Length: 481
Image: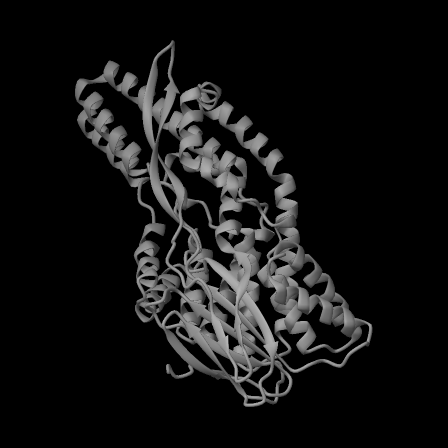
């Protein structure tokens, strides 16, 4: 015996509504707590969130990335490294698979976009490897960072390859969308859509990617490490090449140029390694994703046009940051100079992915309107109650799945600055961060790497002083003066 039309309509409504639930939004309040300075609470929240997604969900990578970042901020380097290792393992697992196909991406049109696995952007992967190197140094391990930096460089090469393949991937996505969403081309070429995208995203054109999607922070960091632990002249040669590229990307930082001259002299055997302190200042917060609305014209059968509001992501830039770090020594005063803009790196990647993102948003809107139209037309011919249930179910489905993908590594810094100075004979430097000063121990002989992470002037920074000498203990958590 067949189910009454009313009951069948309720089943349709429930089935459509069941597609709506997403999981990535649970991470947003944790990221917000971090932005507000509750580092301990955010670390605990990210730990619990990562545990819930440890089994291989679409959120596994971003869950472990944020857990690693937040654990690092409270000085739990071992937990941070374990979280980053899990993120890398999951990314490697996803890489071994054929990849997220166009059909899989388009199948997500009926659901929220966070049902597609977060694979990690190219800069995500570079920073995961670099932070694992810094975690190792913070735990007194000067050997393992070499391997992590090699992986960071490999991810950079992958970013170059992905950028070259982007146009072909967009062509495949658009071809698939034409096959699954009637009226896709009409919507894509509609001048109303073009005007809205220019209004919402036109300002991103000012953010050009660094050369070959390189990262001057990671290049400089690796070069400094190699010069500090050099095992052969080839380490100096590689450091020189890295610094040459970094100097080209950050021409206004005089300290990178000094490092380049030193690496060149060391590679020729013209000088002995000097006693130095290298200070990297990570300040502020990288852009995060907010949600806006675009009105998409959807062309149905005949000449009917339905304007559909759809959720779309956009970048929110956080302007709260300490603009520079002052370094006092008994002899002189130094000020950090800009090295790498994460605003630029994140925005350039977002802009490069925007055509594909718009393609999938349009395809999803056209697909959903088409399904709603077909189901309600059929239901109207079958039964009036089923027709009402189909209308309600379609509206619930379309509304509940109308969410933008807001997943991004939101706890990265806004900018990285850099300075280098001769190691002071007294074995300490004073850092002025906003209105607060901190005395930081460094090595009077050899090379010290000082990494400072400041979210805002009103929150406590993370300061780690790592000697590039395995026999010397790590110094961190200096007292505020």
